[in-house]
Picture 1 (cartoon, helix red, strand yellow):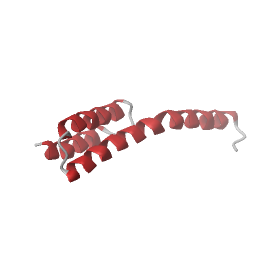
Picture 2 (cartoon, one colour):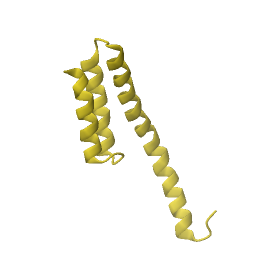
Picture 3 (cartoon, one colour):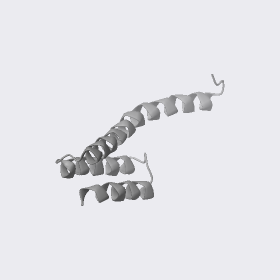
Length: 83
């Protein structure tokens, strides 16, 4: 455990940020995996799942969890299955 006050504050802040970011990151990954699983199984509701996954990707990008190019790349890869 840190002794310096600023280090103690950083630990506290990092934990708070992690607790906020982790569920959002998990939701994004779950949406993408759900879409990929449905695409592999050949299900009919791909357009709806793509919309959900795309929205989750955009939300993760807007919150700073993933970078712009990664968001674009993920959406592009998922869009191949919808066509």
